[in-house]
Amino acid sequence: MNTIEVTNLYKRYGTTTALNGISLSIAGGQIYGILGPNGSGKTTLLKILAGILPPSSGEVVIDGMNLTGNSDNIKSITGYIPETPALYESLTPIEYFNFLASVFKIEDSVLKERINAFSNALEIGKYLNEFIGSLSFGTKQKVAIIGSLIHDPKIIVMDEGMNGLDPKSSKIIKELLKDMTAKGKTVIFSTHIMEIAETVCDTISILYNGNIAGTGNLDQLKSEAGSNNSDLEGVFLKLTGDEDLDNLLDSLRESIK
Ligand SMILES: Nc1ncnc2c1ncn2[C@@H]1O[C@H](COP(=O)(O)OP(=O)(O)OP(=O)(O)O)[C@@H](O)[C@H]1O
Image (cartoon, rainbow, N blue to C red; front, side, top):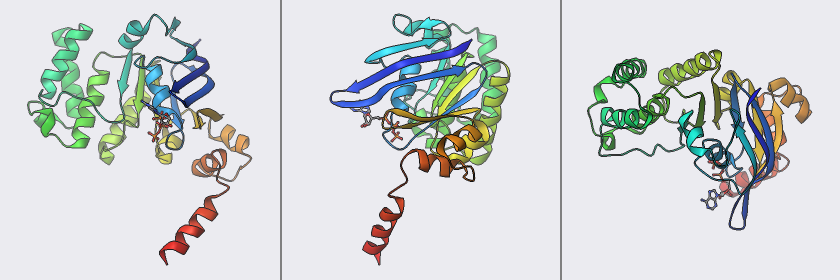
């Protein structure tokens, strides 16, 4: 069974159509990448999948539950890492994790074990009692990631969640995501970093102007784009309209000489 079925999904903000009737099937136990140029609808899609933004129309079924009327249940099985961590600056990470533990009813001993394991792996032990507002962007991102995983969610939704992480932490998170999918969990994440998408994702969907421009593994995307010799960047550019790239570069070079 697919963990997530999206059918004919639309999201409109006033006169802007951010998602233009997209359909997707996301099988469980895989890492699913959402790529797309700026403004193509990635954040909108991920927020809808995380149950924090209502669609305008269309159907989303997650783990057998229709999103409409079940967003609380869906939130309880989902961990969402936003593009920019929205954390309580006046709490310490420990206070923030304790708050989440009370929301998700996590036992003390389990909570302690998870905090220890995550904070050792991501090397944030010395910041656990500092105010979140005083932490660097990358450390806040680590706190947000730990917070989103603290209730052991079945589905992890990351919006450019590896932004700001140093190479070691990024490697640890990538390995952790692979371990999680090996245990049957599903990870959906957006990124602009082709290397991450290419090395981590089992399946990739490329969004363009609120539509799906292509879906599949790298080989399937290459044949969809008709560019068998390209890497993911080449495929991405092909599927998202690279026709005027040379003209844009030429006129830029003209203007800076
Ligand atoms: N709250 C909002 N109100 C009005 N328009 C919005 C809102 N959020 C997003 N949009 C618009 O919807 C479209 C899709 O935006 P979205 O943030 O989903 O794209 P994205 O692919 O995540 O972009 P980026 O790569 O820049 O983060 C854009 O045209 C954007 O301006």
